[in-house]
Image (cartoon, rainbow, N blue to C red; front, side, top):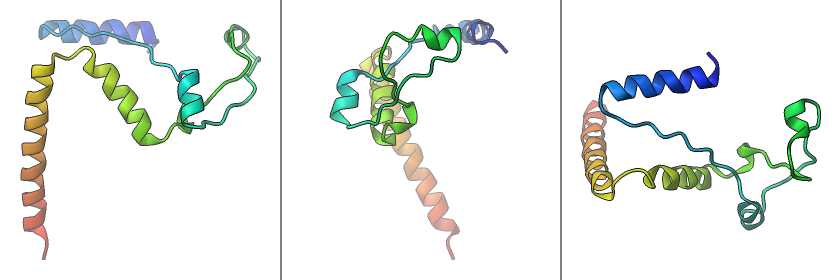
Length: 109
């Protein structure tokens, strides 16, 4: 399914429940490349889209340490989530983790 169609479908399904979906492009910044000492490479110039890349270097997303990537994504999500709702979700998550730990612990021999 093309990306635009996928986005429209997700927005339509979410709207049925009164939820607004926001799509935000997140990119690796030059500051992050420097701070995290991420490897760079020459950009690909094979396709028309590649040739439009305005920079003299590229950095692969998978070069970012998982914890740093998770923090970047969480920060972007938190910009759109009311802090009171976030706190409620964190409490619910902690409670669910505790319940699961007890259940799993009860299964051990």
